[in-house]
Amino acid sequence: MTAAPLDASPQQLSPQVIPAERFVLRPLRRSDAGLISMYTADRRVAEGTRAIPHPLPPGATEAFIARVTGTPAPGGAHEDVWALDGSAHGLAEVLGLVSLTHMERDQSEVGFWVAPAFWNTGFASEAVAALIAANPHRSRTLFAEVFQDAPVSARVLSNCGFAYLGDAESWSVARGARVPTWTYLRKMG
Image 1 (spheres, rainbow, N blue to C red):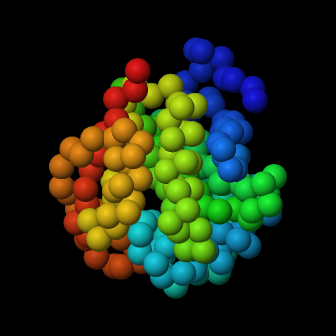
Image 2 (image 1 turned 180 degrees about the vertical axis):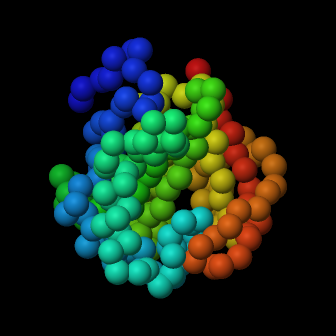
């Protein structure tokens, strides 16, 4: 694993490979499009996120991969996305995704989803814990938000040391509506 220079800004960093116990977190690649499309076409996955549409339009996954693997726009929000790749352990090449979006003042927002075939396996908690341990953005504070009808996702955050911050609402593209959320915070170091 290659570490970024200590003076690099999050906009200069590219996703690194991050080891976990049963998989690695690795940067996305174009060949991931098929599995990601198959998983995110499931209404349950799409409705658990803010940004995945349902039904999934043709080319949406390829455009997403191109956006997150391309060069970030200056001054724009920078999102790093990793695939949970279990292929070295006899599991699927993509089990789900985990992301960090750089915010202002050394803060990042964590996002994650796991394919329904791998729900209740602890993969989400393992991925978020590995991301926290690596802290690739060198964030001082991490935020996360989950829909209130997804208590298992809230438990992932609690298991990884996030503290409940408050209630809010976020737009869900798949649901076409604002959805009540729980917001969580984790101080680093």
